[in-house]
Length: 200
Image (cartoon, rainbow, N blue to C red; front, side, top):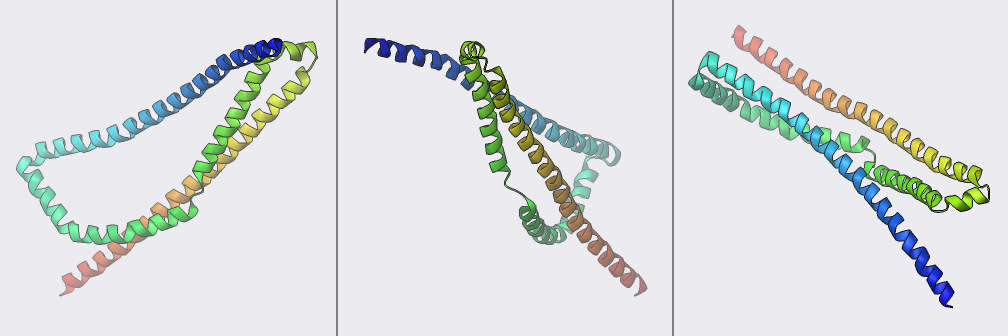
């Protein structure tokens, strides 16, 4: 009876460091992904903000600060009503179209995390029982199991990347097509109004 207790506590004490290592590996992957996304946000925001600052600085040097303020107020005031109408009609249409073509990326990410966890579990199980595998010549079976988990993960990641590619193409096409259509309609109406006003 005491021998089985000692064996149970010994095996559970062997499992705890392995679980801690798995948890630490998962944390480092999550931290790395978070850092990459944070760096992408910074680079995507810094360049447009710098462009706006440099453009306004150069414009204020050429036109003067008063001219820049007056020009900004004139352009924004005349376009405010038109832009309000465009925004109110443009964004709901594109939002509905993009939502219709967007797949469930959350479930794909959850499935990828589950497959990654299964692969890590296979590796940790092999590390834990490496002596038994070598003693019983089970390396071919273990290699087959690990390769199976690996190829399932790779297949899922490739499928997700293909879906992301087609979703990106569809999303950009919808946004640009609807925007181009609205731009052409506005340009046409301005041309007609301009020619009509010039003939009177």
